[in-house]
Length: 280
Image (cartoon, rainbow, N blue to C red; front, side):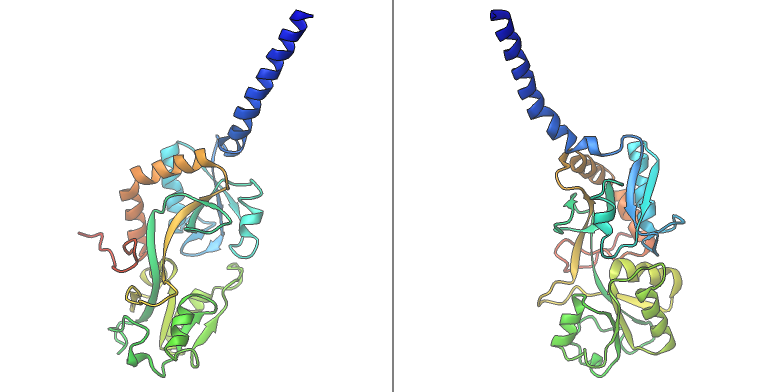
């Protein structure tokens, strides 16, 4: 009987130890692939991510995967409604390369860059020196804006919405590209200026619209804010994976900055008040 009691006690102790140790492991690193750097991405979000690998987030994925000594493996899904649910949350992949800090759908790593919305105009336009949406030069001008984005509130405050041309926010980029449509309209003269998220508009201008000027909007003082810190997104609770990526970001920040700068992403300081010049 005494031996049986000791055996039961030992089994109970083991079950308590495993109950404390194993679930925590299973909820963190065990859900992350050990054989590939599995990236959740939009296949048609040029110039950010593309199925042919030409986007700058593709380059960042290759950079991080090389540091991990793993191959990149993609799960493609349009970055619209249901993107996180059908990719990261479904455990089909382990990281979203670019995600705004503070969003509750994911657990954010430390941010690896900060950027802002930008006003885009032809270089030879009389609007080329405008850097605030309350500038009188914008009165009566037709400005392209993605409906529902933060700059629309600033436009409304300054009486610019009435003549604005709206573009859709949630789209399947495989069949519709609001940013490219907007810049094409600017090139044709259908609109006088465009407002786009800098990490989208900046690289598009650098690659395909060399006669345009990108002006990051860092001088707006009233809410809503127009700058965002960008992180990598992982599943909630995966602290081990989050810390590993934080370490990789910290140790490879210069290489990350180089990829972003080469792509044409406008980088600003963490407070969104100053454009950074990485050429110095």
